[in-house]
Length: 91
Image 1 (cartoon, helix red, strand yellow):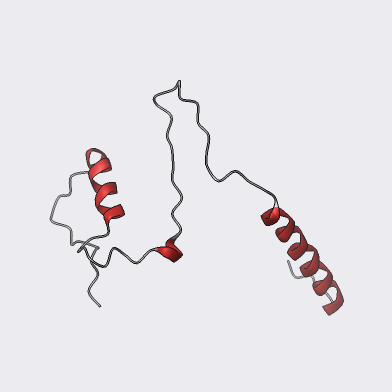
Image 2 (cartoon, one colour; image 1 turned 30 degrees about the vertical axis):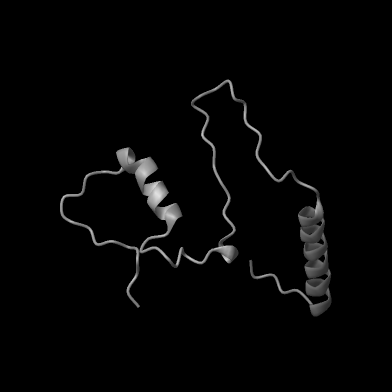
């Protein structure tokens, strides 16, 4: 993509891209995901706003990390040798 564009073309494209993104972000979306309860094998995800996360300062390991480890422990492969803990990280 060695196409040279003028400053005017760049600004036009940037404006259109910004307007499109603003329109997409401003559309009303439901605050929760709906699932069909009839299928027990349906996978459900969650969304966490990390800007509000303090890392559970009162705990050694954040509660979300502990819960995820406990819930998914059966999926973890068994390591050949010990693996260092990634949390809490030493500064």
